[in-house]
Image 1 (cartoon, rainbow, N blue to C red):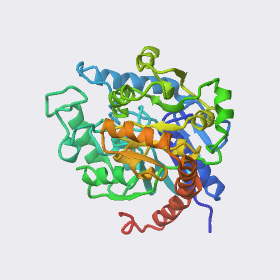
Image 2: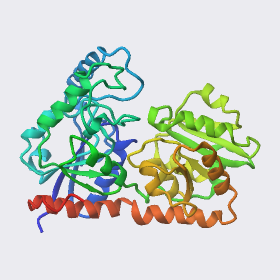
Image 3: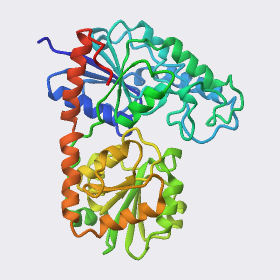
Image 4: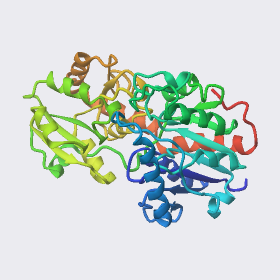
Length: 418
């Protein structure tokens, strides 16, 4: 069979976030013989010829586009904290040879003024769009927290602090409705995000399937806990409780629930480790003996961090998947999360972790104690690693996507919605 050529469009630096999941898939595809090229707006290309940083050669346009979107959002002075993207601005990918020669165009997280959705109408190739958050189905927000307007008509947007039905969210939703090609194949990275897409007014009649997000278990695997603690300078006989995210106070990360959970824990039994963008005063107020690591950029360091912990605590109220959950489990660290959205699909209750009742803080506290002091902790740790290796490794995802690419290339779209 002729070598399959796939081009991925991925906004953001490849060192973390949604871009990392796309990068690992790209690596899995290369390993299985696919001619995979990744076009990104990030400056980190990892020294790989199959990665093209379009923003590097178009810095002026990139800054102009960012400024233009900031000016639009400035019309909403009461906007709440949280990401809102318009999809109005982007780069011209059509001049890139790899894009011209591709069999499949694969979209991932394409915000931050990376892709103007109007360009999609001019692509005469099969398009696949992996849903890495809710933005493709909303009027601009990335997670519709306590809002169901995306299921009918966006407007009077809570995130924008708007009381006008015909606001920017309404305009973005209507523009998507007019411009998104009907034949895009959408793929949720969890059953939860696929179900949200099927409920949305924008995507409910589109082709939607599910392929779980992936991580690289060649990079995330268990290390000796004592060695990992020593390498990180952690000296404590207490149970190591790990929390963290790229931006720990993003609204959907459940910082208030984290705070309430930590307040109810016995501080004589737990040592707190925090990674990601966090404020020193916020961590100090938790009242634990702690170590604040800040943003951890490289996989080797993150492997140490996960391996040092006895449990990883995820208090997110919404996650399309839960990349840190899968990474922690791959390193043999059980996870305590809420029984809701993406993380609930990864963790097996009392087998590879603990799923507390949705947003129930006392049950979350119970789950932490249950896992940390379980007589069969070693079995739980092994089950966590096994679950990720078997279901979420890049090789597993790559195989599923290759099957989907071939179906799309052959023009059979009718069987792809599930």
